[in-house]
Image (cartoon, rainbow, N blue to C red):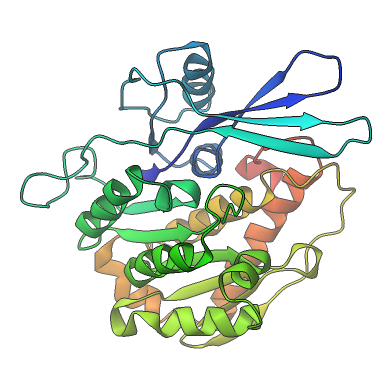
Length: 312
C-alpha cells in the first residue's frame, strides 16, 4: 500500500463576467491520482468538507481508484480562487482549512491507516500550514521505521510567505525523507542566492546516514537533475507541444516514485539498497518521470498519464 498525505482543494477560475469554473486540485492529491493511474494501490489521507466541492474531490479520487479512508468533516472544502482580468492576469484568494485527525497512536506508533504503508509521500501546503502540518510530521515520524518517505516542498509563497519558517519546515521533512523532489524555483525561494543544485547537495547530506538517498531538482524545459551517493545525473525532456504546465511536477513525482516501487525499493527494509542506487539506474528513473510530465503538459490541466501513455 502506498499512502499520500496532504491537501485536496478546488480551484475556481473566474473569467470576467462569467461564473466560476471549478477544478479539483492540490499537489498531494494529484500525486495520489498519478500513482493510481500507474497501477499502484494507493490511499489518500486529506480532509474535505461535507459539501458539493467535497463530493467533487472524493468522486475524482474514487473514479481514479484511489482509496479515501477519512470521512468528510464539518469545515468547508478548501478553495483557491483565481480571478482573471481582461488581460488574463490572475489574482488569487485562498480559503484553506488544514486539519487532520491523529494518524498515530498514543505511543506515537503508526495508526491503523499507516500500518500497511510501504511508501508515504507528502508535501506542499500540508507540511507548512498549521495546525495540520504537525499531524503530518507526526505521521511521517511514525511511518519512517517501516516505510520509504518521499517529500516535495512545492512551496506556495502566496500562502506561506515567511521564508525562514518555510525553510525550517522543509528541512524537518527532508531529514526524515528517503526521496526528495523540488523545483529549482522552490530552492531559489528557500535559499536565495544559492545555486539550486548546491542546495540539493546540502539536502542530500542534511540527515547524515538517515537522510535522503535521492534528491531531484526539476528545471522546467531544462530537464531534471538528480544527486545520490553514487553521483549526479541529468536528462533532457521530451519535445512536446505544451498546452499548460498545470500538475506537471506532480506527475513527475508520481512517476518518480512509481519507478522506484517498480524496482522494489519501497519499504524501510530496502533503505540500504535505495542508498546504493547507481547513477545509471537513477538516470532511468528521472527519465521515466520526465516522460510522464511531458504527457501532462501536452494536455490541459492536472491530468497525469497511465502507464501505457509513457513512451519508452
